[in-house]
Image (cartoon, rainbow, N blue to C red; front, side, top):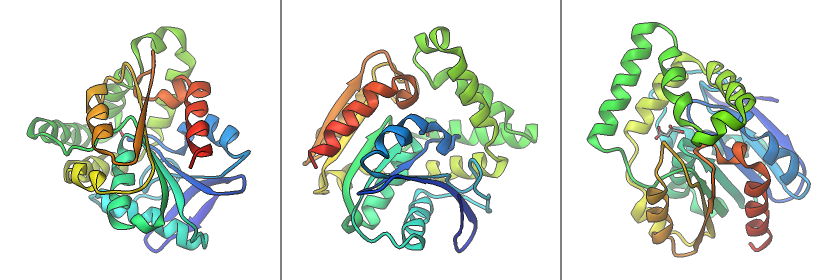
Length: 264
Ligand code: MLT
């Protein structure tokens, strides 16, 4: 589905009925990472999965796309759909950074937080340099191939590459669908994001951290650190999974999420 927001047309999926569960994808991906969650969780919840601006089928705009801006896009979607009941907001990786920005700005809108394959900290100076180099490589190439080549070998647990090559190819196509504006402006936005540790430690919203044992992009320790500051949180680790744990091990991921949602 497409919806006209103030600055761009946003693509999103809207499935099922009940308490809204909004799922925000990571970088440089799209709502196409959530099919297994949308299929199963929409039996009990209204699952909304947007494409962030510049990603998937959503229009790109000039950037940078700060996490605050992307969080405001989620709010704009809720307002456009006239959803005013508290939502469960979930995000994977960069989607988690967007979720934290949303929680900082609109905590009263939240019934729960799902933080998947993400971290609370801001970028180190080496991390910022890495993003600037990644942006320069894309600008120089004139296409996003350097990002495809840089990200794809890190998105999964080592075993997923041999056990599930179809999934790897599927995710390659999802990345290739991301616009150049999306890749560049999201990197610049992530680079500028603040540390969310203090915000999370003051947040009184039930929160679940889920992380893959073999995440090669965000180490398990970073997620454990984030979970340790939550006053109302718990954590689950999926063995043998990497950064895209919801796609690598959808049945286990969904079970953990459904058990947690049932207890809210
Ligand atoms: C993501 O997977 O969303 C990003 O790689 C996270 C990041 O670059 O920090």
